[in-house]
Image 1 (cartoon, rainbow, N blue to C red):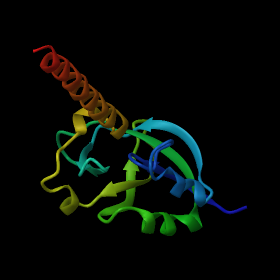
Image 2: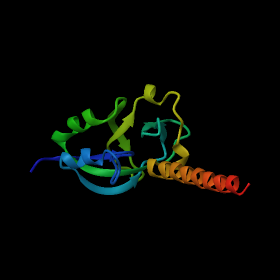
Image 3: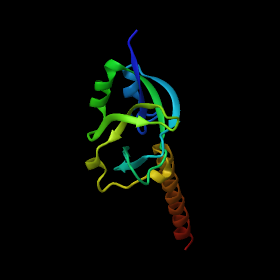
Image 4: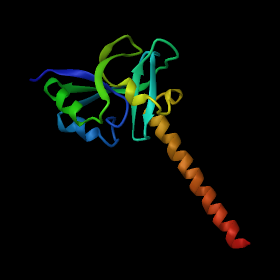
Length: 148
């Protein structure tokens, strides 16, 4: 049986999201949800995917998923990731250290920081909520215009 390594993912590789198939195709298995230790910050890269970095100050615990990834599949998985994302060590809230998807500093420059949402799912849920509110306002506005 091939050995596997634990990998913490924090964005579109998570269950049900856009790039999760990349994990599935290499034979990865979901292990659990977890939080990082509170030493990470998170940025939204064009609202397409996040980038996480470990910091000395002003960090937070970020929601991640832990996957058991076949060791031979790590390089293939990394090649399928967007440019600027890399694999490094991530410390979890329970003290465990695993490999994880991180973002290069240059990738995060000029991008909105989303750390205070605590994770990609919470951030994208807020984006979806904002879109729904705008759509509801537009419907109300159209109704008001037709009444005038």
